[in-house]
Image 1 (cartoon, rainbow, N blue to C red):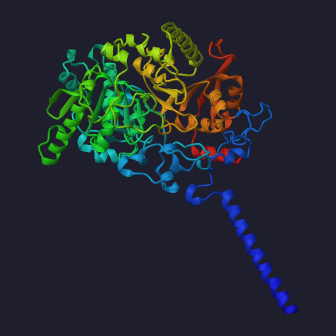
Image 2 (image 1 turned 120 degrees about the horizontal axis):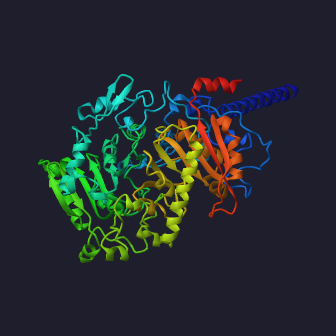
Length: 616
């Protein structure tokens, strides 16, 4: 009996030891992070790291209404530093991360391009670290030289130069990459190609801006955006759009060049732009199957084009004579005819269709015609995460009667109250006062920046809460462009921004923006942190996102309540930011509480130096 009891006790002891070892292993894995996912202990997933210091937000899951800015206690824990992400993440785009798709085993339809659409990481998988610049990173070459040449160290990818060498996309030249202005369809230069399109449309002096009536363009499958880059000299601005596909880094090259661009794809969701935003859509060998799913992708372009807008299509189907190309051309011609588009001109390898000015053609179509008109309750300006529909977006009754948009030519368009203000119940007087107010504010910003900023230091600007776009309008005389961001859950003011001849996107600042790291020279944040506080999203995540998309030596202008400003101050050292000045803002009619202005500059740091600083 005694021997059997001793044996039983021995077995229990062994089992107990095994269980303790397993627990210790699990704890070790939890706190050290999985090397298979992280690749380095220099960063942590999610806000697990931030919560250990008492920073993070649970999105209000515990029912607490405590501000995301904390208690306001000046002794509140300040982070000494953020860890630096692994070098492999120097080009991380959190919501367009294919590694995340693989890790989460998302079931996506590759034929519908769902793998190129936004899929943001859940909270526990967010990176809580600083994105390092690549080794050898240099301050970007300034505009306008940057249109034609960039530092190879900043985007160390040359496969496009080799793959597209016969098409003059880009060429290696020692420490630099040069852009001759070519493209898949315009090997001899975008400038000649653009002039040819203007000639096909009988525009005066072969100028694509059509005496100011053609201002905004959507370039689908833009490559390195030379088409958009060469439009700028004609006072035409393009939203150059491409996914992070096999031609990786094409949008990164575009933004490094100082050309407006956005990572996106014609897949299953509407593009983040309102209806009737562009005078011209362009596709040059963009490899899109326009006939799929009852023409849904072409109908998305139709939603985005203004009355009388053009679609310039350069592709083999427009001119080739083999059987397959003829079949595609025949079916595509039938589709656009049912959509009431007409051929404006067809020459050589390019066809240009034009959209009707009013609803008359739609109303003459036989009953049951396909594609159908969209349902009357459909909001064509609701776009964030909204699925595309294979239907034609008819014009509102007033626009139908006017036979067009009623917009002034550029540049008068920038300050003329657009007709769609009435959709938002905004008066022309309110619009004009807003324009005047932001003109004064922009002048004040530049006087505060003056001692620190050189005339050519700023090119790519993002207004993180653009409202009517008046901040961007105030910068008209400067050699800059502005990505005007409008919150997805606020008033539909983005259509006003496009009607002013500016560009922008809807977005949710609880998530990462669809762009590469280090792509903007200046970020303007007007009450963005206060808005985030109301929603309970993580302000730390937003700070890290702003750092991700801001170029080294770039600037941030924060205009917000004092609680938001004080919160940001605590993170300056950890983010390697420098506060240039903090001043009281002039009284704001939009805010009951006085606002403050904080000007910040991001330092140029190297990963090795940061690691040494963190360990001391």
